[in-house]
Structure formats: C-alpha cells, structure tokens
Length: 203
Ligand SMILES: Cc1cc2nc3c(=O)[nH]c(=O)nc-3n(C[C@H](O)[C@H](O)[C@H](O)COP(=O)(O)O)c2cc1C
Image (cartoon, rainbow, N blue to C red; front, side, top):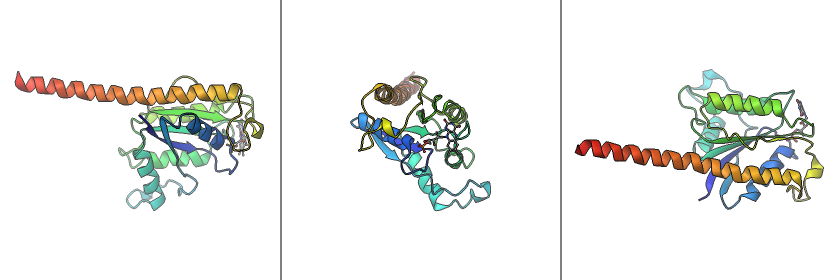
C-alpha cells in the first residue's frame, strides 16, 4: 500500500540540496510512498490574532498536512537551528490550540548540509517540536547528512550512486515501514477495542 507523505522542505532555495534529497527519497520508494512537496514559502507569519479568520495559505497548508499519512521533514540547518520558514510552518500547522494537524502523524527528519555535522542542531530542534506535537518520530536511521553538495547529484537532480544514496535508500525503506507500523498498530488496536466493546454488550 502506498502511504501519502507530506514533505516539508525547510529551504526556499531553487537548487536546495535538501529538496533534491527529498526528491531522491520519493524516487527510491515511489511505489510505496506517494509524496507531495508542501509549499511553505507563501505562509504568512504565524499570528495568533488571525486564528479566527486564517489566511487562505494557512488553510491550504493545514488541509494538505491533515490529508497525509505521514510527514517527512528535509531541512538545512541555519545558525545551528531550524530555518525560520520551517519553524513558521510548524507553528501554523500546530494551531489553533487543540486542532494541530500534526497530531499523531508519523514523521521522519532528514537534515543535509555541505558542512561536516550534517545539520545535527536543526535536526534535533525539529525532533523536539515533533515530540511536543505528539508525532511519533522515526528513531533510526538518524539522518544528519554531511558533506552534501551539488556534486552529490546527477544532472537530473538524483543522488549519484555511493554511500549517501545507500543511507538514503535505507532511510526511505525504514520510513515506509515506520508509517506502516504506526497505522497498522492503530488499526489493530481499534479492531480489538471494537471487538471488546461488542463482547461486553453481549455479556
Ligand atoms: C542563514 C544561513 C545559516 C547557515 N547556518 C548553517 C549551520 O548552522 N550549519 C550548517 O551546516 N550550514 C549552515 N548554513 C549553510 C547551509 O547548510 C547551506 O547553505 C545549504 O546548502 C542550505 O541548504 P539548501 O541547499 O537545502 O538550501 C547556513 C546557510 C545560511 C544561508
């Protein structure tokens, strides 16, 4: 079964390495991950005053996330943290209070950088927000992708064969299995509860 995955890229740059990594993940599991890139560059800055009459871009973004089976974050690190544009998107999706569209969505976090520590700081800041937002985040493989550059990709923007592609392939498979496990467990639990309720009724 193909799961609907909302991909949120924390970079607005046309030639973003993170966008290209995200596309490669979709390409590697195209049969099982039905991926959509979710636009975040047009989201007005979150302002709680607008909760009662939200801008149309917020509404569109929230609907897109709500329709997904899982969320994949692919982001650069800016000054050892989450790029502002991504934090804004997370804040927009998390509100109004009690109506977060991220609630319970399985997630994975990938950070890519030309630097050697692969966006570790941003990766864990995103993870921290996901924990608060009640998103089951895939634990392994962790993906702090260092030394990623234009040279990591071929002319069509896909990852060249090599260790980076191997890591990304493992991650793409693990993310599919993670999303499947979360949804299957919930389905079985719901079945069990329905069965138990039925038995109680007939007792
Ligand atoms: C404002 C800014 C801050 C940055 N800070 C970091 C940083 O803390 N760590 C890091 O590894 N790279 C940092 N970089 C370099 C980015 O990793 C690099 O530009 C990368 O290509 C951005 O990702 P993208 O190609 O997906 O847009 C920074 C870049 C910018 C523009």
